[in-house]
Length: 603
Image (cartoon, rainbow, N blue to C red):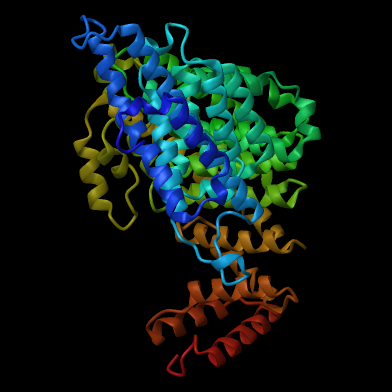
């Protein structure tokens, strides 16, 4: 009947009764009949949806077949609800039987034999859920009136969606997952069920950690598809209204909510930035997990929400002030009462470094904060501070050599040049710059910023660049950049005594990360780093395997070369001025590395 008659035969009582009985006991059907029933229902609903669109256009004119338009609307509405109801009921029945271990398998003649999987339910489920999503995304105003779709119809579709979302195995199937996400977005946004959807989504987030990323994707997709961020805004505000004490009692839920906020900030940075105010009070809450997540949100927003260039100067200025406010909160949170939050903030600053999202004006403030955290009482904070400083060295905007003497000499020349230019054109002497603190960068020309830090061996290039730069504003920017570079270099150089102390720390992570930082300092020719690295030699006698391996790896990287003669020279140079203890450590290292083949007999 479903295949041979017209679509609306499903409204006939005898056809409806037959299908109802088959759907009710779906799990008992043989595989072939399961497939035929699903395929017939699915294909008919697929044909019905374009018919609804055609009906909307036909309603503007008088019907050609003599059937009153109201009757045709009623038939389409009933058929849509019945087909969707049957298909969703089949999905629920099949998933329920799969969970209980029955129905998904068939055996021969009812005897206990090896089960046979006779049809691919995964493919059918994904097609059904996307078809239901299609039915909810079309304009149903003609069928249901301006009030929207039938409440019970939407409620049943929602129930099925959330039940499936609780099954992690179901969400592994991409097609099914996409269909479920589309249904959530359509019901919330197109059918204006924002508050109900928000409550259900938050329940899933609190209870099931594997739903977090997928629900964030569903919310972001709804905003993109319908141009309406109501669902996202509702969720953010609902989270903001939650009593902070509730998050203390529900640690797992707080974790999940925090991850959801970070995921949402990653996908909808502009929307999150405009609604961030409702979440700020949670920085003072008792749950460090929520604070940690908000720190992650600020990091995402600082890196993403302010990248677009807008011709409107007023809007651009507002965005810069907003970004500056977020960065100031991140600076403040480095002194949070929770060690976990202090550590997370430092990790976020490292991420911003990698994203090139920290301006030169703010660079030294971050470096100063990281330096101060090296003496934090918590090992996890010290570890994050060391890793942040490593990242800052790697991504520093001041050049490949951080020697204070070079900066001082170059800075002096450009200061003289600046004074000369300013005396020649006093009218141009006033710096016109309305950017907030922290947004002044090296200048407009990347090649100019590269030129301000020439190596001492390349004096000719330095003089050449010095002569070429005659623009007053560029010279000012270069002087500001060189001053910032000198401050950063001085800051890193001043850390050597603290780093030597950390090499003697009882914490293995302190020692390992300090060695890595000193190696990076040596790479950038920071003064005192070579001498500080020698202090690691006695650690070769450490009973902690991780410390011994860290020392050995650093030793190989720094002092062994591809050419035996060069390795020999570096070892002889290392030998000079060594104490008796250092010599014993050096002898032990060399012996071990010879046995391992890291130092050759030629060396």
